[in-house]
Image 1 (cartoon, one colour):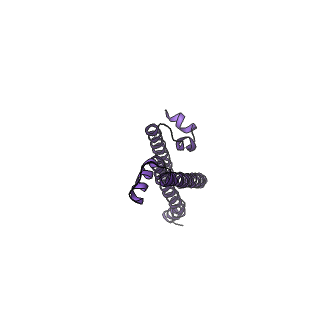
Image 2 (image 1 turned 120 degrees about the vertical axis):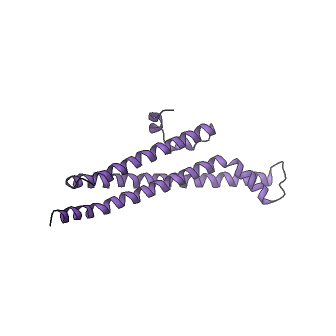
Image 3 (image 1 turned 90 degrees about the vertical axis):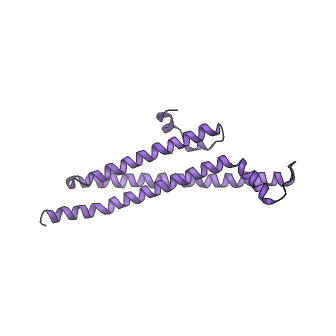
Length: 164
């Protein structure tokens, strides 16, 4: 799957349980590309702080990118919420099955829980990957906030150096 295909696909596609290893690799690749994209944007905006005469353009871009990051963070959190519901539903169904209809008797709750967790490992993996990515995006929002905060001081420094 090339980068163009990753850009067209939605996260819901990755949450479907088919071809486990391929989906994990695609998800990891997608998040890697997105992290690189956001890192590049932050570096570019930080570099633009050098030219004080272009700060007004930077401000527009910074606020735009911050809003995009906030909306994306919210989207990831909504996916995490859906995954939590799905996890609880699947866990409950599997627990009820192994408690009442399963052919294997488990000596204790831990054994039953371990069996269920092994069956839900793909869903848990996806949820953990989304949580890690959400933390990265939240950190990126914080970095963009720092750039916004630094713009004022960059202008102040330029005014001081100009003798104002």
